[in-house]
Image (tube, rainbow, N blue to C red; front, top):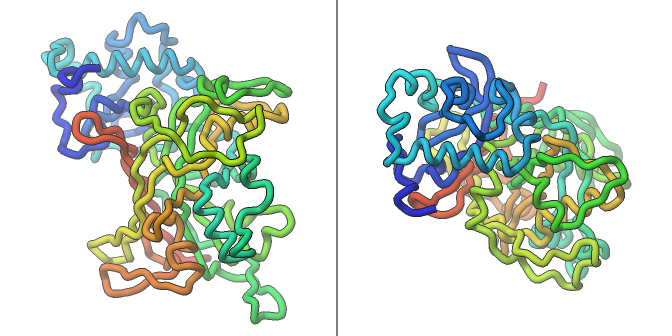
Length: 421
């Protein structure tokens, strides 16, 4: 794609995540109609249902009304190749040198909305959700804090992409408030657990990929096969009640300490848009078992950051800067491992990366690590300090690759914490 073709007749603010190099897909509603499929260019949301109705998406093999859906699942099920054709047509239509829409004010009025005129909805119907644990820095930090500092990683960690099956029904779109959970918690100084509000509420900086091609029960995938099953990615905040989690996780792992809420960004950025940002991942030693061998670069250079905005404050404090390229296990290996026992993959499945921590203290992807289990404090713009998340705090995650006309970003995922009931 040439530099010139990335100029649009729609105004795109400087440092926008939503350039012509992006063209994500999401679900929006407004005062004109209910939830439907759209894309975003700059601060403009494009109604793809209206664009198809006006005849601008002909010849792409699209079923009639495919964009009238309240979730992306039917569109994603058409496959990555069809989505790529749609994305390319949108880039063509909104390029600066294309007059087809640029000169048609009547159609523009039907298909274009400013982003402050729309409400973003949950982009996919998540049938199944898996959360991985694939950052070696994060796993090492947790092992140092709670196990043996000299043997921080458990024996299986470098052999399998560790994960667990999470709660799909409590995944919510950005902007949805998150209620502090109640649960059992027990301090080391206490003889027995008590039930009450979480005392150590945390975020986890993650990304998630969404699948678009199913497999049948008993079918397996290689990392090479996995590529065509992955549609795109979102930012993912895996809210975590650390004290509840610590008491419950032995012997079966995360449960109520995780299932109260997870937040996702509303725009699904396609793997085609992220293709220019592929990069080599960390060296895997020992070498993966043959079914996990991956001979392509499947990590992505995506800059990530987390900020906290205290209740009533006009300013936010950036507490973390990390990058998705640090992941030890890549998404192709994660999906191949998920299917390795014959577990069936469905359209709309969501697979979270696990906390994305980097090698430096300011790149740790959770308050657990940033405060080192509460032994340090982080300053806030209103003069207060944080070890964990307080009621009223809004946690904001952002991510992007590239710069200028080639910038491909995710916008943000944010959520404000409400007091426990």
